[in-house]
Image (cartoon, rainbow, N blue to C red; front, side):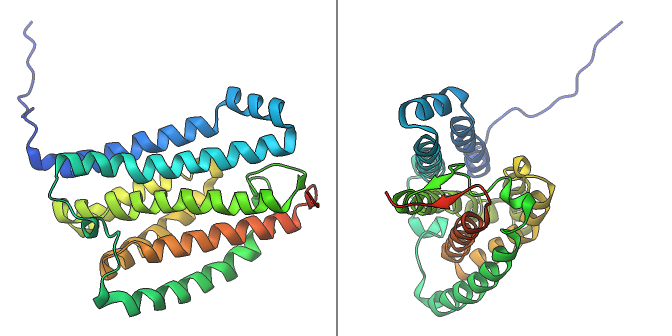
Length: 249
C-alpha cells in the first residue's frame, strides 16, 4: 500500500503578512484580555484584598485597560515592524480633512440612534444578567467614573484593532467584502460568551461600522458609537438593576 500526499506550496510570501499579522494579532490580543478577565485566581485575589464590591471594580477596570492596550498596540506594533513604511492613516487612525464633516455627522446621528436603542435593551432582565460588568451591590461615584474610563480605553484599543489594523490592510490585500467577512467572523465571535442575541446583533453593526470606516478613511465613527453604547449600557443598567445602588464614598 502506498501513501500519497497532495503537493502544496508552503512558501510564505512577504505580502501574506498583511493578512497574517492582523488576523493572528486580533486573536492573540483578545486571548490576553479574555483569559485575564476570566482568571479565577485574579478575581479571588482582588476580592479578598479589596472586598467584594471594590474587588469587582478593580477586576473589570484593570482588565479593560489591559485589553485596550493589548488590542490597540500589539498587532499594530507587529505590523509596523514588518512594514515600517506604514503610516497612522493606513490604519484609519487619523481624521482626513476631506471626510471630517461627514465623520462628525455620522458620529452624531448613529450615536444618537444607538443610545436610543440601548437604553431600552439595557433595562431587560437578560441584559441585567451581564451588565453592568462590575457586579458590585454598592457603587461609589469613583467606581462609576472608573467603569466609564475602563470602557473608553478598552473600546479605543478594540476599534483601533477591529476597524483599524484588521480592516484597512486587509481591504488593500484581499478586497473590501472579504476583509469585512473576516471582520464579521472575529468581531461577532468575541460576543459569543454574551449570548445569541448580542452575537447575531454584532453582525449588522460590524458591517455598518466597517463600511463607514472605509468610506470616511478613519475609525472615529466606530469609536464614538461604541463608547456611547457602552456608557449608556453601564448607566442605564446600573439605574435599573434591582440589587445595585449608588452610595456616597
